[in-house]
Length: 126
Image (cartoon, rainbow, N blue to C red; front, side, top):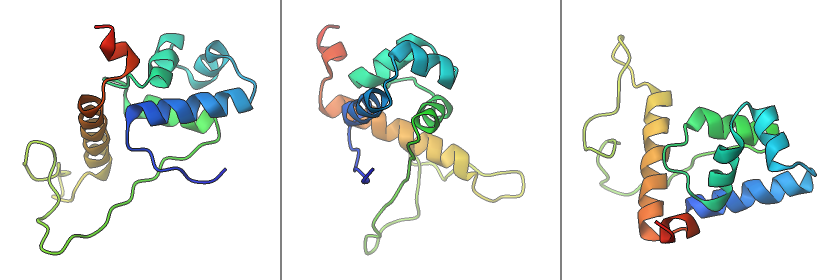
C-alpha cells in the first residue's frame, strides 16, 4: 500500500476504515484483535481521536498491517524542538530525551490541533 500523509484525525480514521474493509474485518473483529473497545474503533474511524492513547492506535495499525511514521523538514533558524507548552522535551534520569514521551506528546498535540481546525461529524453534533 502506498504511503499517505495524514494531517487530520479524520484522514487517519478513513485510512483505518478503508484498510479494515480491505481485510474484510468488522469493527468488532478489529477491536477484539487489537484489544481495544469497538467504541474506540468507531471514534477513530469518525476522526474523533481525542484521548485515544498512542499505544492503542499503534495496536490497531499493527493489526491492520499498517505503519506509523513521523517526518519533518528542517527550517533554517528553527529553535530546539519543544513540546506544546514550550518546555524542553521530557528527559530520562540520565538526562537524555525520552523519545517515546516526546512522540506521544507530538502526536496528541497534532491530533488536537487538527481537530480544532476542522470539525468532525462527531464534533458538529456536540
